[in-house]
Image (cartoon, rainbow, N blue to C red):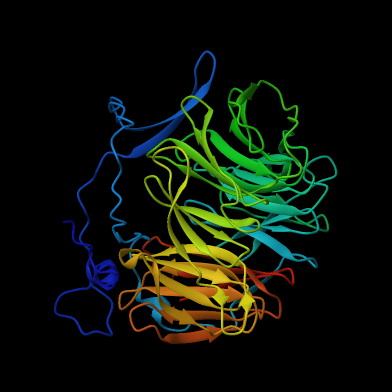
Length: 487
């Protein structure tokens, strides 16, 4: 029988592999061993004569398609989530506990995205605009909003594509496609300009605030998810639709969460009918099994085959109430969190989502209270969950997702989680409505330190993973401010 690796051993292996030999425990490693290069994995979303499809392939010849009757690995192996090269700085408080303040807006910040090269981060605000900042200088670079371009309602989600371009979704139902920050100067609020990276003229900055509007949703956009290594992206909305956008051909493949029919191809930006009574709250893309899984406000989980664009299964009332968040744990294994306070693990290999495990981690039967599951995060070999009951739970997949530890550091609902590595221990950052950012040691289960970025709720957390002298942690808050911490 397959023996599960201990989750604690996985966490040790995460940071133990970068420890320098012959050095003290408090010193950073002097050298790192570079692993042997492997062929890059790229995902190709292509359009056939009739239907688009999604295929995963390595560089060179495409691998043969796996048989659909082969069952996936159901051992829930606690493989560690590699978050890049570790750095000892996150174990200790930042150099400046107050951080570098970025006063973006006088309205709440609702979302944030960090570019793949970790040079820029963008925050979306309730004032209908997006604000881009340089992570190196902590200074603003451009405002993604003009009278002719941008959103006319709240910016609800934002994501960077691999080439640096930005996708944003708003309450107006639009998906805006913004250019990458390759130019030198940027027109700022008040008519001023600032020099950029390459020293070009100030007139070139105008093109960086021009967006291409993709009007495919009839209601607010709830999530945007770019397809890695491609010119494709998914978007979901409160109109009950999920759209797969092809940025080159301008074709879209529409999935209706309220219908059992196959996907519909559209060549324009005309919105579909959708199911406004059952909005899509969250979704995830299973690259290995080429499946798309969504969760709706009515608690329904839908599964689509991306090669045929057919709906292969649906489970109604997967949660008692809306599906608030979901994530892909491994091939055909999906984890969802609901407003009923439960976390469920689904097996989708047969199409219809089958409940493998159910954990009432945010339900307190003694007090009769229930907190909605607001966020999920892979924390090495563990699963971290944050809830409206002010708690953060650590679940162990090798023990049927049993709760190993519960953190009660916050005094308000938890909104954001971020797992990262340090040379001495893997750590988890937690942000909540009380405006406090806690850093906990996942090995000792102890709090290392806490920070108070601003007086607003911590809505999003991002951290750098590349090896550099100073690591960065970015926090977006509801008072319209973003704070950059240097470690």
